[in-house]
Each structure stands twice: as C-alpha cells, then as structure tokens.
Picture 1 (tube, helix red, strand yellow):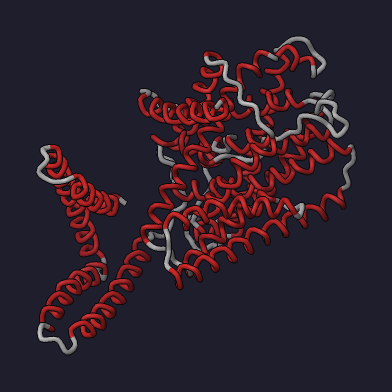
Picture 2 (tube, rainbow, N blue to C red):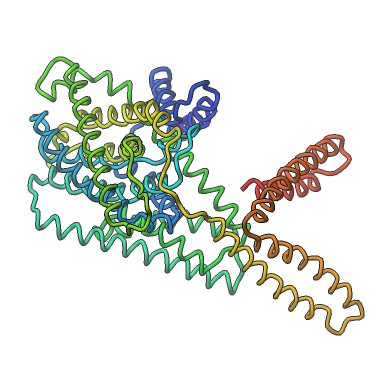
Length: 545
C-alpha cells in the first residue's frame, strides 16, 4: 500500500503542478513548479522515495527516449544532421573530458572516475524543459528541431559515457583501447537490437492483424512493450539499452509507414503515449524536488567530502561548473554554426550570418533535465567490496544544482533572446502539402469511380450510386482545383479556408452545446449523446490541427 500511495501522490503532484504553472501570472516553466511542489511534499508529508538506480533507469528512460526517436521529424533531422551530430557527439565528448578534469581538479577528494561520471550526466540536454520555458515565446521551428535531435543523440552518448565512468570507478581501471572497442560494440549492438526488435515485432503484428484482425488495446500495449524489450535485450548482451530504445523509436516511424495500423489505433495510441510522456517527465522532476530537503539537510556532510567545512564552497563549485558549461557550449555552438555555413553552397547574395543572439539562445537552451537527474540517480550505492560509492551524495548535489540553475537561467534569458529572433529563411512546406493533398484527392477519385461502378453494376438503382459518387468526387475536385492555384489566387483561397475553418469550429461548438443541453433535459439517451459528441470532437480536432 505504501508504494501505491507514493505513486498516486506523485501523479497527483504532476497534475497539480501543470495547473499551477498555467495559473501563474509570470511564465515559470512547469519543471520548476514540479520541483517546488516535490520539495513541499518532501517537507510536509515527509515522503521519501527510495528506489534501485537500475530500476529507475529502466522505468523512465526507455519509453521517453523511444518516443523522442519515434516522433522527431526525420526530414528536419537529416537536413541539419551535421549540426546535430556536432552538438550531440562532439560537444558531449568535449564536455565529459573537459568537465571531468575540471571537477577533479577543483575537488581532488572526488575520484577521477566519479568526476567523469558527473561530467557525463550533466552533458545531455532536455528539450522538454526548453519547450516548457518557451511556451509563451515560441522557439523557431528549425532551432527546436536541432535541439530535439541534439537531445535525442546526446542522451544516448552521455549515458554511454556514464556507464564507462561507473565501470572505471567500480573496477579501478580504465583502458582507452578497451573503452573504444567496448563503445563500438555497445553502440553497434544496441542500435542493431533496437532496429531488429522493432522490425520483427511490427512485421509479426502486421501479419497477425492482416489475417485475424486488429485489436486496438493489444496494438497499443505492443508499442509500450517495444522500448522495454529492446532495452532489456540489449542490456542482456552487454550493449547499450539506451541506444536500443532510441533506435527502436526511429525504426518505429519508418515501420509504421509500410505496416499501417487502424485509424482508431493510431489516435488512441497517440493519446496513451502523450499521457505517459507527460506523467514520466513530471514524476522525474517531482522526485527531484522530493529529494531536495534531504540533499540540503546533508550539506554539512556533503561539503566535508570536498575537504572543506564551509558550505559556501559548494556554491563556488556550482558556479564554476555552470560557467565552464556555458563557455564550452557557447564556443562549440559558435564554431558549429560557422562550420555549417562554410559547408553551405554560396548561392545567396547575402548569406546568413549567425548573430550573437542566435548563438546565445542555442547556448541557454542547453537546459539539463530529466536525463541528467535519472543518470545521476543511477550511480551505484556501494562499491564491489560493499563500501559506499565515493562522492555519490556530492555528485547528486552538484547535478541537482546544475539542473535547477540551468532551468532558472534559461527561464530568464530565453524569452528575451527569442523575442524577434530570425532564423535562416526556409522553404515553405505549403507547396509540398498541396502536392500531397492533390495526389491523395486524385487517388480517392479513382477509387470512388471504381467502387461506384462495382456497387451499381447490374442494379436498377445504379443512378443512386452514381449520384452519391458524384457528390463525393465533387468535394475532391474542389480540393484539386483550390490546391492548384498560385500567387494571389492561392493566398485568397487560403484566407477563405481560414475563414471557413473558424466558421466550422463555431458551428461545431454550437452543435455540441445543443447536444449537451438536450441530453441534460433527457430528450436523448446518454449513448446517443456520447456518439454525437465523439463525432464532433473528431471534427474539431481535425480543424484545429
């Protein structure tokens, strides 16, 4: 019962924090509200969440990384792949090496391997926290895609580095050649496991569905099991479960194109995954807040691990780490953008030059969040011989401080830097969308004609089928005609579409209100009301997208 109560309290805290963050008059990111609420729970309720670090890693990271890999726009990722790789791999390695040596130099009492472990967990960034921060100041789409791609890859690379550092701390030895060979095996085998598991599962699922029908609940459950299965199988062969989860998510998006699920399955599955992402991210930050009172109450013991007695030394260490992270990221982002511009074909008469605000925004957007917290909490409690893991409490304190300060600094700086920020001009997706809609409409007309003739052939009322087909095809022909316009005519047509959408949304709202009214007056049954409201909800979602 105690475990169930803790889980329910954490979920309730996530719900309350989301509501509170929307009620506040100032734009405070939801993660900060969740941390504050978690700290309040830890102080008032004396709630203590105790967990196995490996279990924590298994429960939270595979589904979150799988979903990130699944939903990230692949075309946008590949377009800026060089920049993403430079940030996700180059910057992570630079951060791990540079910060590892810096932390060990500042705090000689912290073993070198533990310092590198701390550097590894503070290297990944968290786009969820950035999105929450910039909710009232929209991030340029291309910048957000780069941040998402960077986070997807640096989560994996940072946690792989963490694994090496923990192994070195436990065994007391480290070999560069051995680490390189191990890294290649962990990365290659982990990615391979994720791809193979996803392809096998999706093909088997498609084969069963094609021959015996599809059950929505089981399809959703299968999608939930894939990241955990990939992670556990990869860990079983001593490869990277994190990379397996990421690879499984990326593969899932391609597998779904060729092996389609039922529309109702896709809609319900999206809702389930949205809920899991919302709950898992929120619980991680609430747990961080819940841990804060105990972390702060043990400051005296924590500072003694550094060889000092004054707690202000901890603040000095945090300030030095934050400053070093900022310098490293700003420098690397500037160099990366310059290299990207040098590789670009010089066709424009006035090539885009990265302004300092763009570089600064990308730098402040390197917020640490859920992955950093999950990573630092996976540090072992004891060594192989049963002695306490050296510097674990200090590493948790420093990582927690980095998360909090990065969130606060980004909350203050990003809205100012993003306001009016211009990114390089991008080609509009409108033409691509219009072509796709025209192609789909033409395919629909061909099928309607064929089905209409097949249904009406040999029947005395064939004209009824012809009339019904003509009415439907007329809608598609209007779409083809409207999407084939260009210039002023296309702009006028899109304006008309926006006006029509607003009118349809107003009409749908009126329909729903009327159905609720007559249902409340018992003029129609609840089953009929639910059916009609569900239809209107689907229409409203369609027009609001």
